[in-house]
Length: 200
Ligand SMILES: N[C@@H](CCC(=O)N[C@@H](CS)C(=O)NCC(=O)O)C(=O)O
Image (tube, rainbow, N blue to C red):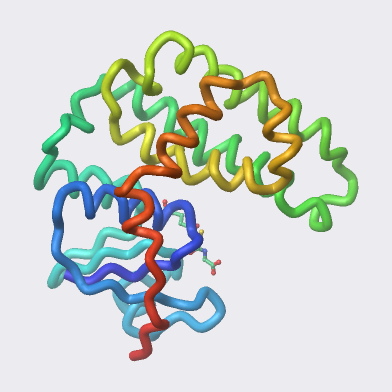
């Protein structure tokens, strides 16, 4: 089992966390986005990480890797959630929220956009609905952590890191607490260890 990964990629982070959670043994191949190994491109020509190769089977969507991992082993019930609700959150994150995250993170690429307006849109779309859920229950879909928390957390982390002081000033205390909990978790820290770049 081989995982092509990139340390700072939020999609790769969620996959690494799910694989680690499920105790999947694998060979970690750290890549450079600018110099992708041929063996990875042969397995998955679209050229994004993460890519999980298991013999002839290749999973090259982070959510598919998460789901596969949880199907193998789910010791804390990450998969015990309403599928439609889970899908709705993750689609909102990977779709419109990711667009706003990129606009917020790379203002130079979007000179026509106002940072504060982008931040406000991100609040309305994602951060405030998350706040509402997290005020009601400790995790996004209830009292128990689920794969949805793990799928979304790396993106909120990235968002918070763009302007940490501005993030700290936002009225989303439950989100901040939830974020800290994940940032400090052993699981997250264990998948953030550095690996040397793998070469074909
Ligand atoms: N839908 C994919 C998206 C993965 C993705 O976009 N990964 C980025 C890194 S964060 C990537 O590999 N981009 C290719 C590149 O920058 O060349 C998934 O969920 O796995």
